[in-house]
Length: 501
Image 1 (cartoon, one colour):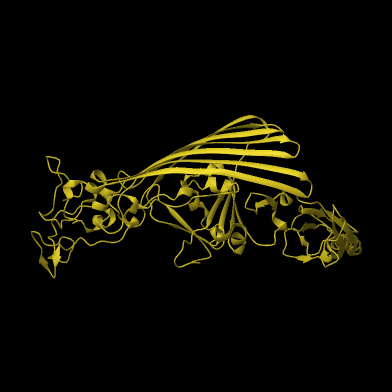
Image 2 (cartoon, rainbow, N blue to C red):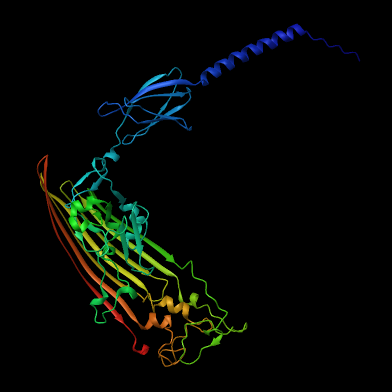
């Protein structure tokens, strides 16, 4: 079989040159479309048409950005396929796609209405001003942030949300009190607690003084709820924190340590709206001190017997086959918490109202410790005349706290001092009397006997009413009058079982 093959080199190179020519034209055209060009422009505001200095012009998806000068002008290098992102405080963010031939532009930014409507409480009677118009710095926490933290005491939700504000909890028990300090200690002899103001009126935030009881004991072994903990977190609209001398200027010596100003929710316009929400939670301990279970009670390797002290554990070594009890796990349990809120609100242009009810129930990880809180609040706003408005609210709160003694001689100290070779759950004799380790008054206190036989309770019933009148005869004059009553009774019960004697 005979085959022949021939190649015209001249024709081949002519075709190849033709393809190379068109490939070169395509590359030139594509590279020119991606070539960066200088974009200049001016940014102004929609409302007044004035230039906006300090606005940021950035290339979307990159780190390249410039700021406008005092005349609102900018210059940035960008490609025709880029997108400019323009931002400025108080204005809506705007994205501008570029196109071929764009080298100059004028950008008009729209005012951010939500930013301008931001208000804060600034006066003793609850008047409001735009936050950007204030001449001093304030901290502000929204009511939604407080509610979503799911804390029984709303003060616990403020930790870490406002600079210079420190929240200290006395214990982890249900119904425990919380103290707040703004910018550290300002007084050695007087209270360092800030002033609490609800809807323009100061309220009491003290704790019960156990010295008022017949026993006349200090509060170091029993904690009492601070009265700000009576406020339902679901009723809070905003919390404004005044940390500096502004509080003292507004409220006098009462605001020397700052002020926490609370604005509550009012009824909204529209048809009736019924809202119900709840939350459930569980708690347990997560960190405990390490204890030894190798040596018996005693001192210097010698066992103590009889009426000798039972709180020292430096006696002889225990036999390896001896029974060891995990008394700590046997004592602590699993805490449970539930929270229910039921709210109804309605209103019109002239009248609005809001009725809220709540129920909190918390059982702690310590046996018998609990916190129950039940309350209701009715708030309304009525526009009597064109320039006269009245706001009223009445809130009732009832809480019941069952707690255990802490500090020296409390349950925690005795729990860790109890011998680990003795079953701590066996705290009663067959006849129901207290079971002792040794027959001596200096015997250790069994924590189970403490929480089941000794009674430590706190009950509070509180009513807060608030009435306000706002009269605005002219555009430049506003008259505000407020009055209210904060009345409560606290019953403290501290009972020690006679079998301790």
